[in-house]
Image (cartoon, rainbow over all chains, first blue to last red; front, side):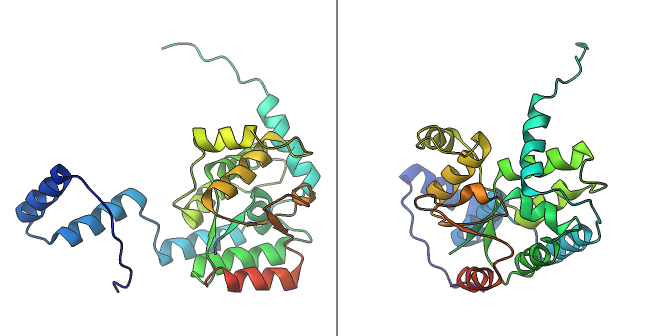
Length: 87
Length: 144
């Protein structure tokens, strides 16, 4: 459902490009802009999020206190990575 | 208004312990779209560190699933790093300062975290996952 109105300023050249592409693709300029938004900042759908949530809650990891978690992050950053030979 | 989710909330949803139940509730509300929350690339990196360390048991895939739950992530860019560097000296570490700056520049005033270091910060309210009343309030308010 389209409920949100967004007003943006663009250049004359951008408008021309949008209109040409919309004509070529046989869609409205609005549809083209919505498609571009989804391509740039698209989010996973509800089914994907539910699957991810189920996977997380199926895990049974070991409890670490907030302080231990914080220290773990520091340790990880301090760890020396093994040298990688250039290919 | 959206709230910010810290790494420990994601880790606690996947591990046993006192925070597990409330952190599962938070992630469930986000997954179902009944709460609006954001997290950042820096948080996912932290979760990934914990996952790869093996210290929290087998939580393989946690960072990837968190990425799916929270996409699109808030990016940590030069502006955020600059704001983090300019924060007044406090007990917060570098990553936590990045989180505070991320919130500030994203217009987010609430961070859900078990980390008590986020207490008493100007402009950022910390909600502990175990604070049931405050949690209910932000879950409701995030949709408003």
